[in-house]
Every structure is written in structure tokens, then in C-alpha cells.
Length: 143
Figure 1 (cartoon, rainbow, N blue to C red):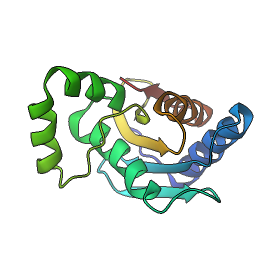
Figure 2 (tube, helix red, strand yellow):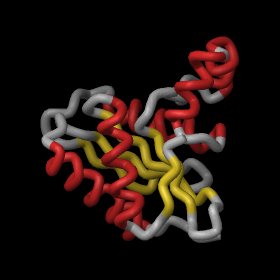
Figure 3 (cartoon, helix red, strand yellow):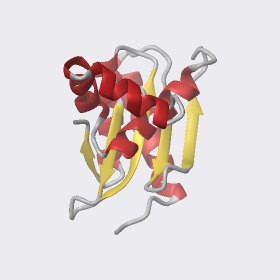
Figure 4 (cartoon, rainbow, N blue to C red):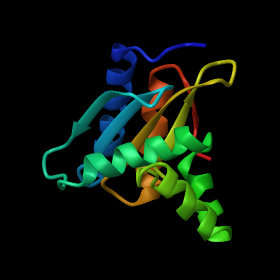
């Protein structure tokens, strides 16, 4: 299994921010977690609100904890809200079930980390995360 290096995490952040700028998105906050859920990189663009780091980490953490991109968690929350509420409690409140938390997989399909982005609408956050992950040579799984 491939580990996410600091350089790879920085590539993900830079490419995701570049995609956000290309798309004209609101200021983004980008978090990259390794496969153990440890924070590897986080950047909060100028103008991004104070709670954005927690949201970005929560999107990535939820994806990692559940093994599903946060778009799939959103769908699960609609179908089984009490289950997702219980999982959020078990995760210490750090599970944000909306698009923008994208699993990072290696070329064998193994989860090696997650990227969480917040700042714009969730679909745009997810698009920026996917662009960052792919720019670093990994496979993105938004759910």
C-alpha cells in the first residue's frame, strides 16, 4: 500500500486550489489525511471562514472512517439518518456527510488517505478534491 507523502499531500492541496481558482470558486480550505486519519496538509485560503478547517477535516475523516466518499455518506444519511447520526457520534462529531470528502486510492484500489474540501457548494468542493488527487497520481473516489 502506498503512503501519502508530504510532497504528495502538498501536490493535492496546490492542484485542488488551482482547480478552485480556475472554476472561480469561493475561498477553499483543503485538508489531506493519511490512511490512519492523521493530518498531512491543510491550507485555508484568504477569506475562508474560521470553521472551515474543521469542516474539511470532517469531510475527509468521515470518508476514511466509513470507507466511502462523503457523497455516498450523504446518500446514506438521506436513507438512514439515525445510522449516520450514530456514526458521527462515534467519530466524535468529525463526520461531515456531504460531498467534498474524497477517498484517495492507489492504483490497486486500496485506500491511502482522504481529501476534504469546503468553501463552495459541495459539488464544487468535490470537483476540486478530485482534481487535486488525480494531479498527484492517485485515484479519487467521491462516493
